[in-house]
Amino acid sequence: MPSISFRISIYAIGLMLLGVGMASGQPYPNKPIRVVTGNANDFVGRQIAQAISVPLGQPVIVDARPILLSIETVAKATPDGYTFLLAAGSFWIGPLLKKLSYDPVKDFSPITIVSKYPLVLLVNPSVPAKTVGELIALAKAKPGALNYGRGPTGASSHLGPELFKSLAGINVVSVPYKGSAEALNALMIGEVQMMVNNASTAEPFIRSGRLRALAVTSTEPSPLAPGLPTLAATLPGYVFEQLLGAFATAGTPAVIVRRLNQEIVRFLHDPKVAEQFLKGGAEVVGSSPAELSVYMKADIARMGKLIREEGIHDE
Image (cartoon, rainbow, N blue to C red; front, side, top):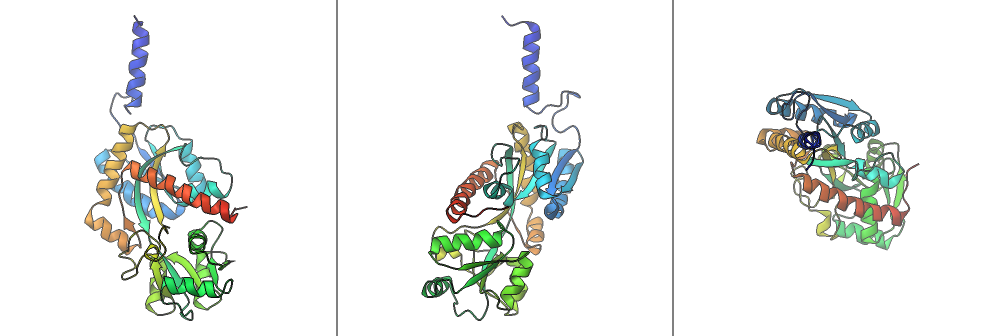
């Protein structure tokens, strides 16, 4: 029969795995929580922090850092639910482009898909194509004659068109710029003929006639790009979405992940919050941890295949 001390040790470990604060004997959470964000996600992080602090009964502090540092901070954190990450798709795409210090699958526990930012396929108005089908036909008729503008290697403005080229079997030349804003300007003045860009950023230029939008790159039409069909409607299998997700450190007890998911999703599903996000150019999601895990792994497989086949790599 096990000794009393052995049984007490096993009991203590069990409490720890359930997320119970051993020091105070109180259930999770019993101290402030930190949400670590890349600087670009600081605003959303603050909204979430403020919303979930009340039901959790603890302050939720936003720690905005450069994106790589924010990821590494959470990867190395104690897996107790007191530190979690907000990160976009570059978080799991980055390691496909170059060697990084973390593994997005092994080092993290998904909490929820927070939001998605629809992207649109754009052309300069001088391009005669009015639909995705016509653009593909034009590119096939004139291989290498069309250029697309993009930001840095691995950005959505880079990988979105590369996936389009691959699935459509067309030859369109990549023209890199310092950032997506510079590429968008180049598209408007006709230096390049096409681009994939954030819908809300492009919307005023579409409305003014300086750009023409052909399709959204997501699986479904978006309220942020009203009237536009999906690119997949013409090119089956095309899916390219920009998501923001919440992640705990790997090994965080499932009961704590579920609690964080519950409170974040409750906030996101408030109609007033959804309206506020739409005004900021995003659609709220609020998924289960499993849905984020499945999406991330599928995206890693899909984009990993593209990156290997096209020889894409970051320095």
